[in-house]
Length: 247
Image (cartoon, rainbow, N blue to C red; front, side):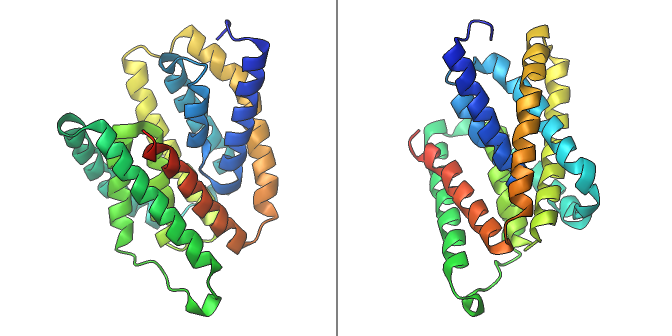
């Protein structure tokens, strides 16, 4: 971390503000920042720091909005996600990672495109996404979490999109999901000694930027309509899927 040039530090600051601005406005999107930071920060350091930031940002959002969490949807999500983790571990050992990544990219980009297209249709022509998609999305979040880590948030968003939650409940519930995942992963990192002094120092340096990004995103969240919010979620899904197509 301390070998970063001033330009690289400015770059990291901009990425953090952008990523957590998205997180503050939509409840997810922070995962988009990780691959950009990995260009200048070693993954061995970045991954545990990102886990701490994920937990801290979720707590920040839930501090005021915990009552908006859809507990019914959160509880329904968990068993399918656990099943997905088991499936993901199996595929991680048996299938080619590049093939999996490209297949995932096609699926996520396609869903984001479809979701965006729905928001552009006349209101009378729209139909709700079948709720049966929810269990599939929650299972895939576990699969993707085991294979790609942060990309699991894409399927959190797809799952909640099928529940047709209001934007406040959407953001609060996905933050609760992310907090749960971050805590479980954090316990694992602690058990294997990944939380070094450098990790904690880097986390402390990143926290003010994370809080600033969430504050900016929160102002955006308050002032956007439900339709604009849905379109933002759709575009973010497409942005998450596109990099996987190039792997």
